[in-house]
Image (cartoon, rainbow, N blue to C red; front, top):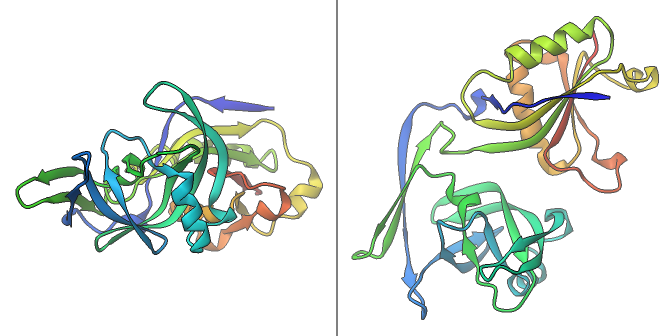
Length: 271
């Protein structure tokens, strides 16, 4: 059984801390036949125009463009997170795929691990939405020069906000329970919000002895999607401020499951 801690937790990582500096990115736009702004976007090296839409919650496009990206080798099964549905502007539900784009390029800037939605149906416009634009603190549109200015605060969450859906803390011995409590209370609710954890669970029961015997270190950070290695390293960096790095190991659990479990992590403590 797990006891759920219902609060939002903010983690910071010194990996992303490079000082408070502002950087401005200027990208040109054109207006299409419908008089809406379009900008060139690179998706894993494949460039195509997208509608610049600050009201859209995610980067999204139709299955026609998705097919082009697959045929070009820019996307594949490894990029698919899950099947889902989304509400269209007319109020109807449409089938969709939630995917993760490894590299999304805007001008000279490349954003990594950007969530996007592939919407099934005809005439689905490609939209550059908030899953990419949330990386910027301010957006200015200059209609006279036909450029969009994106301001980015380097070294803050405006540069890179990384979200984790769920973190589970596991004590492997009775003695480890206190360490789990301290880790939850004194580590994950301090610092800047470079890494945002939506919820934390603490495992009430001790794991089986055979599971503990497979651990190679005092602290083991388990991730269940190979694409989440970067996030696992951020957890490692945060914990290393409290425990020596040599005590912390990363373990990829994805090969043990039929399907990856994105944005889910476990931290096992074995004192």
